Each structure stands twice: as C-alpha cells, then as structure tokens.
Length: 122
Image (cartoon, one colour):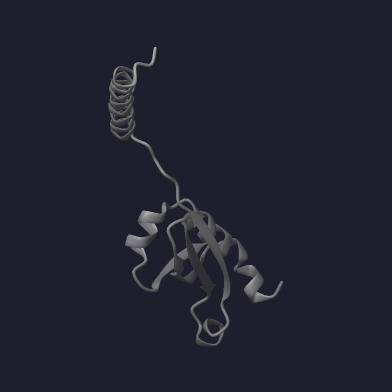
C-alpha cells in the first residue's frame, strides 16, 4: 500500500470527528488554518483543517493529513465535508412562537367581530 493510502484511516477518523461538530462550533474553532498532530497506531500524523465556505445553510471544511515529513507534506491526503446547519428549537423558542400565534388569533377574532358589527354580517 502506498504511503498516502496508509493515511486514509486517519483522514476518515478526522472527517468523522469534524462532521459531528455543529456549524457554530466549526466557525468558532476554525478561524484560520488549524494544524495539530494525532497519533494513530504508533505513528504521529499532521492534520490541517480549515473552513473553505461558511454559508447560512452549511459549512464546507477541508481536511488534510500527512506524516509531517517535508516531501509528503507537499502532497497530503485530503478531503472535504459539508456540515449542514440545523435549527434547534428550544422549549423557550416554541413557547414564544405559540404566544405570538395566540396573539394573532386573538387579534383576528377581534377584527372579525368588528367587521361583522360594522357591516352587519351574521
């Protein structure tokens, strides 16, 4: 197996790790290129991670792995992943939305009653 292909399990583990991170966490953790070392088996690997795109609906993250040697660092094994944003509704947000809906229903009932009185609609 060629050396870069030996790095594939490391790359796949890093893809899994960063894919499980929320968009907000990615944006706060990856303000530039983040470089760190991981140990896989008994070998140390260098990992570089950076945001390629940050949109309202997803964050596109680039991940590269090499063995830290100068020649191989010039041609790392790399991939990218799109992490989709999710809207998380808290009970407070749901309660606020329901309050607004109730306010709207009460307003509509009042407007309907006023309309019926004004135009004598039964």
